[in-house]
Length: 430
Ligand code: EPU
Image (cartoon, rainbow, N blue to C red):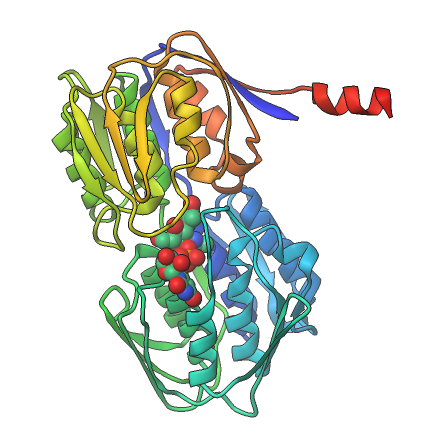
């Protein structure tokens, strides 16, 4: 069992370079399936979700070549399968992007129902509605989603909820469909725009990504491209909060400031100083932190993927803050771990009430999902004493070299392997 061991109380100081965006990369890599030529993709984060995507591409028959630390050449011309089995899909929510991409390429797709972070019920009804609107028949049995169409046809699609994955899957499936597709109530996240830009660089005709109406004129062919993934908005936000929580002074580099607007606004309201440059920003925190009421919402409002981190910062603020989670049913699981570190938080349904205590103390805790893990790291960095975080595989799904980057900023954090004492005891008595 791997754990992070953090000795808290060190100010983070220096520069950190943000990696490519997880939620863009895990859609762009499946999109390569649609190309008739090899593609080169740069700024791909080194995280386990990406490694799973690459394994799926290889499983389908693509040739994957690593050209540099963050750069891959992927040749999809040898793909000869439209099936993603359970062993791959169970490990990653974003495996559902292979549904849209394979359907767009073969008019057929067979993909196991996706896994991913346990954030509550995660239906894919909106994805299935899209495929049906575009003319695909579907069968859901034995944990697999089977799609098939004679020819996908462009259609008007109107989402009942704003869904990032549904919007991206609609783009993937419609990009080669015959005629025009109009997507209403589309998600506007930066990764939706990045996927559209990537496909347009391959010859697609996608207009309006980043607004609530996206129009796609189907094309017959998509060609090779050389593309750089956008920086990770949530990794940037996580380092910003970590810098503030330790009263540090950190230059966060390789970012797109407009993607961080809602995070910057929230942190400034809490009392953090942020100086914005073209592709970097500097975080310092000298003033006392003040309470904040905040609610998560789709982009451009405050992202749910920053909710656990900002809540952790609010435990260090003066006064009572109210954090409302409006996207996921089950994104306060980390709260019981923060309580073990001295936080005073009560949760009632989708609302957490945080009584700032101004301090946290180290404790053994467990990451229950990716962003929960990030929040516990921040808590450990700000706390007095030692924090041991287990189940850090969640963090490694989405953060590229988290502990290395933090160590370079002066944090005392290391990853250590431990035998599981309970497992050892069970084996001994078996
Ligand atoms: N929803 C439905 N039906 C659907 C799809 C979604 O009801 O068919 C609901 C969900 O239950 C949720 C809301 O719509 O209440 C939004 O879900 P969305 O589809 O936008 O989420 P997602 O595509 O599954 C992506 C990110 C998540 C991030 C959400 C919201 C990826 C791979 N995952 O998930 O990222 O929280 O958008 O921004 O892009 C993370 O990175 O830690 C993470 C969980």
